[in-house]
Length: 112
Image (cartoon, rainbow, N blue to C red; front, side, top):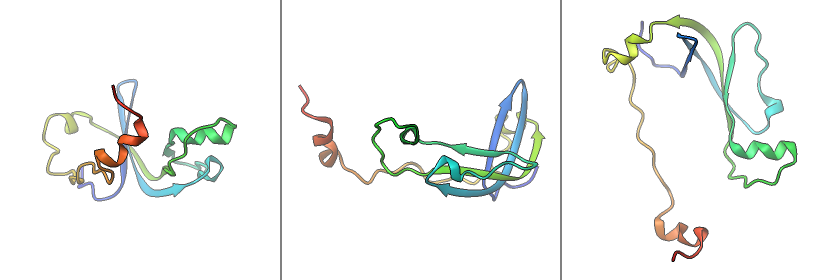
């Protein structure tokens, strides 16, 4: 197993784990998702996409994130769970917030 220096997704189903690597795209509409050909397209769809079905939802502008696989292979999940892969996975920075508690307090309404 090599170093993970490209976007990837792990899929675990029925006791088998697969790793898909590929290119990431950011989309506005479900209709813009690439169609899978030989390899899967894996997407994260925000709740606000329900607007495409006619529902009234708050749209915070989050895009659909899609990984179009260029590689798809079965892997040994134990290599990720035994602690031996820590040096292979680059660490992304932790979550951040650009809104302070004071800025967002009015959005929640008064507290009692």
